[in-house]
Length: 117
Image (cartoon, rainbow, N blue to C red; front, side, top):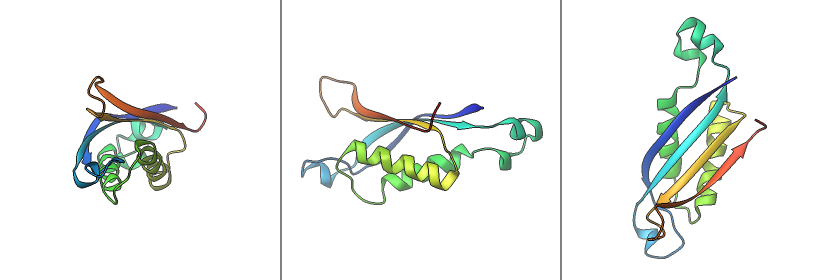
């Protein structure tokens, strides 16, 4: 088993609990690790045998913008569900950060894990 990584994916979304946050887009950053058997892709050099990280990245951005969400926890769970169900990923680690949410911190965020590692 190996991991396919998407690190530092930056995108804008409407997220927040305060009324002013519900009217603006804010920057989010995502790190995603997906467990995957890469042996067939390595042997064949064929994208059909692996996870298309460009497609996953685009779908994450679409998912984050389907509807406004208040909590970063809810956004992270929604994204994890999409990656799991739409791309067949049974094990993943996802970190979602909201830079600038707390002035004294670089970012706040949540990290979730699905499946046994």
